[in-house]
Amino acid sequence: MSCVKAQGFLETQAVQVADTTDATKHRKGRDEALALARSADKVIASKGKKIVVFDMKHEPPDEETLLAHILGPTGNLKAPTLKHGKTLLVGFNEEAYKQVLGR
Image (cartoon, rainbow, N blue to C red; front, top):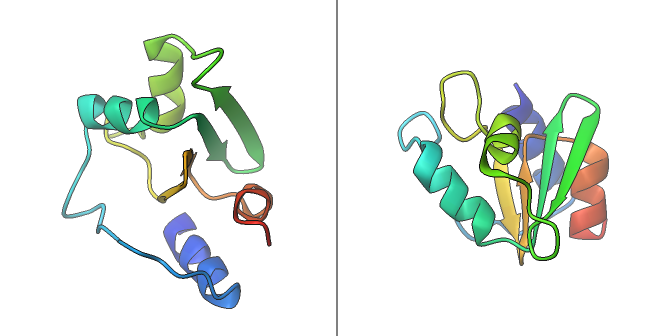
């Protein structure tokens, strides 16, 4: 459901999407999720209205804390996940998307 909301938000805001991956066909497990998160300067993880921000450059969380926020119940990276510059958004929260995308 949140993927549909994210897609709808991106469409209404006329955001150009450079690359998309179907999370049901191309799952990212623990190691790939960690590598993706570590490649970012900031990780913003959302679950409903709750947002957690990790400063990966200056105060990176321990591995288990990070994984608890970016992996879903199947053990794969939560969808939707959006990378914008050096910021990784995991899960959909409209306010977080607006802030990161400058909308």
